[in-house]
Image 1 (cartoon, rainbow, N blue to C red):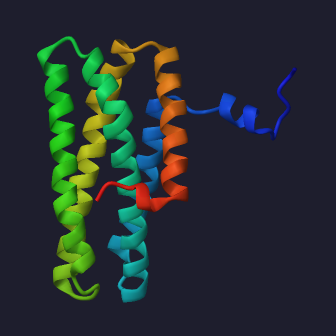
Image 2 (cartoon, rainbow, N blue to C red; image 1 turned 90 degrees about the vertical axis):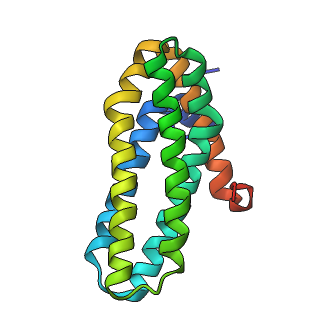
Length: 169
């Protein structure tokens, strides 16, 4: 039976590959971090930091549950394994900085400084993945493997968006 546009099967058939999905997440978070840095409105800061936290938690979880293990398994060289461990450690740093931003009063210089540090850490991590890890993943994994990972990641992402209680703390 042919798949019609707009059906669930058609949407599944168009799932992005793992790298495209992760880059799309990076782009969204970059935009949110830029908006956070530019606003002086405390309510807007709170809303943006909450959205950033949600996006980062979901992104981190799908990377750590699905993408990173596949990358580590495909990694043959020490340099590739080091990329894996660096990425995991950078997630750990974000896990410490983000709650501090969320717990700080969203006005004043301290908040601005903490938001800047968060932005710097997240952008460094995203850039390193995009320039180093993702090109290596493209060499280590086939297009079919990356598409299959992307489908699994998209499914898991949807589950976490629908039920945030399933997010790791």
